[in-house]
View (cartoon, helix red, strand yellow):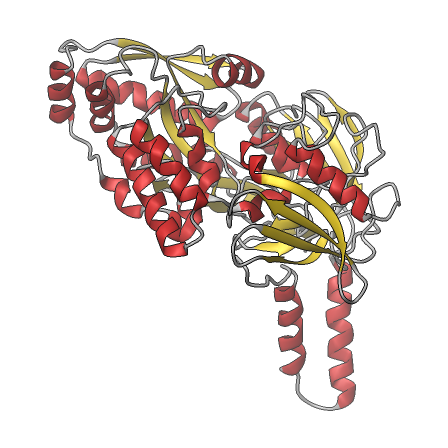
Length: 522
């Protein structure tokens, strides 16, 4: 994590250099080739696109946003000290560089010169300190609506320092070692004295806010003062809100949307002559999440029976044409070395084994339960429909309850008033972020899961500053969740994206975002 990261446009620059070096002939010819290359870059600029999304934004204030669907949009308006690139590296953004002390107790961020907010004001060290303190709950007067991650409880102080060469930096001191904290410094840097963030958001990202109409759209335009030269290419981006995937699909058929992700396999097939179909991963943990305080899911053998009764490969085949990655615990492959791929096949499809476990659990004739699914995510709805049919083979009757996204947040996530649900959980690029919700005391443990072994091991994994040890401990945590069937883990779903054939540059990230800064017209 200490290694310096290159900015993501370096690859573009390198490819241009290689093209120039490959030219042959006279100096005049080389000059013409260079002009053509420059003209090619210039021709990418301009135009507008409409991106379809299926959920409204829960807040325009980035420190108050909860929903992954909101964050994927605001990624274009706001930036942190660092930001993820398409390869999962955390690269400098508002910061020009950073360093982490050997003991994992101090993070130092060196501020990039000349970064401007969308209102034209230069970003100062005071803005950065205010933003960090607001997001970590260290302001003297805190806003209860600001979402403060529990991970920031280790932050002791945030102060400005001056480097030996006279530049400004921000030093974050911790009260305990933490070498995973870097991914949380993607939190948005906002102006200190700006009071309209909830209605007219101002950040430093490649696009600046224009307008927002609830349940209709959010419009943003090119930031002409963006510090990263050459991007974005587009003049304007509109994220258009549709009620669900079916409604968006109708607009795709009509050609009124340029980009839309999370298509079903059938929809992608129908659109392949009209759009380019890009295939990536959603970088989510999709699972049948269980409320452990709702019988019969407080019974381990019932939970195990569900695992054996569900054919995950069939889900992938039916829902996404075989695309996607089967997972066995609460982590996905994007986490690299921290992800334990051996758990994917811990439970195999076995109807007879499922029936045996149900009989041992006292449910020889099965039982009835409800799967609550947000209606705006068709991939989760389709997965639920396949599972309902599969469970019938072992005598279990499952009923799907479709709800609006806002209702899912209030009733399931916050109220914990449900039996089971199918959604996808996203994460920062930190292994602790994807598994910490299973701590019995975690406020976002909407599963009501409790395991003393997990509770005792998680703090050790989180606090470790030895890489090998940390990897091994996170593997152990995943195994606990698998063996105890904390949830019925299914897949990191395939992300089928329809892209206007006139467009290029759409990229997939190992986090849940849609980056419009790299998109351009051919």
